[in-house]
Image 1 (cartoon, one colour):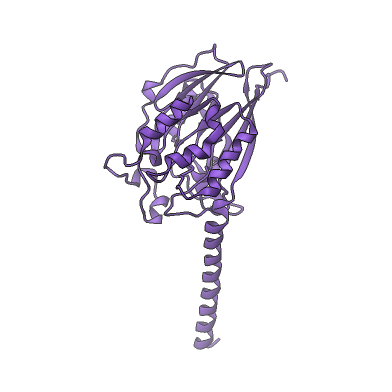
Image 2: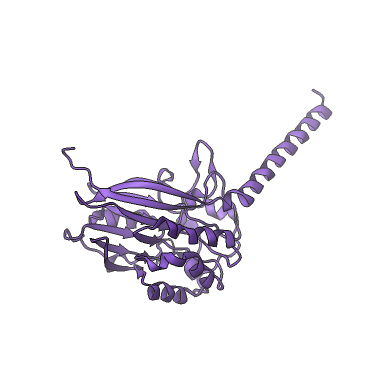
Length: 311
């Protein structure tokens, strides 16, 4: 092939690749980032003989006031009639998002619920070099200035509605006749977790003990498991946000391995194990409004009795 022919072929190939890349970006932004889905898992963690408990896990809405489709979709989740709502943070992306957020949660706020915060409940997002997302968490920098989102207003709205604040706190709820003990941490990604404030072996009198955190860092997961929590719920990862079909996520944005970037898995530590559910969440930063091979999601977890060893 002549030099001219090689150059022409190279330019044509580059053009095709550029067109494919542009099409993928367009799909990721215009379609998949708004293509909400409900995941369902069954988790055997309740005492023998207990009735099933339906837990709606929502996370990472990163809500902007103009996102009416997301608001409507989340609002309709109340039709599932869950017994409990667990919110693992990163609710808002604008100082003007609290009232739209309350409109999104709607009737869900009338149900028993617990919540923790993520970084985007405290700080609004800013433009970042996308390459930073691929860096190890310890290499990422966080803004030193004080919070600029109305997290106290949001917290008060949640607690006034009856949801329980689990940021570095413990709580007990009675749900469908079951005693549920909770321990939660504030966001480990920005080092606001204070596990020492909730540490301690779970109470065997509880029907179920649940650990709740925003970012599933290993230090927090290990602490929950060491204290005997059989179920841990987290968000933060966005499921990797950009995944490779047939391969999966490239990053988790924390020190969790990519095999557990979303969905239900098992986390083991020091001879103990817990069911771990990581939500891929419902949103993105407004500065990176794309998802690829990783649809935005909420999850309905059906908790059922543990399987007896003899069965």
